[in-house]
Length: 170
Image (tube, rainbow, N blue to C red; front, side, top):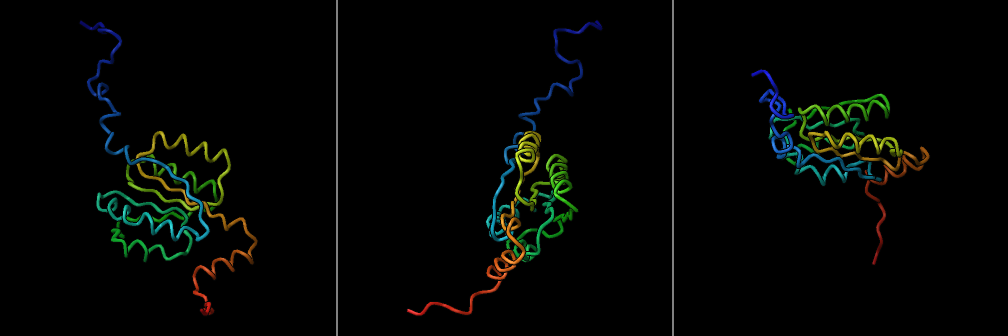
């Protein structure tokens, strides 16, 4: 009676079809990469309604290395439960991507937003591999203004924050 029938595993817990067991959770699991000139402010506004819905599911909304763009106000106005927002400050790009990978695969978060500089081919491939086992929605916001010189970056930020005092007269 101790012989194995066929090639199937003996333990009934191993008989679960994990693809259908987690299908509802994994259908929303994808990693999107977005480039921005506004430090991610506009992109955060675009997904804030979806983040509000996800925050009411009881899991974490993880923000990794967000710049000072008023993200708290944007999220609060959209109805995101602020007690479900987890803020992670990484010291460098390597730690930022590692934190994103861990947050996506942990199963405790429903969305992970990561602010980073431009990704190279190696980092993009790493995200593709992580996407296969991700259990949350992932958004990578690549800041293209980070490659600009400091003076141009500050002018761009000033123009995005402050309205112009001059307007055209018709």
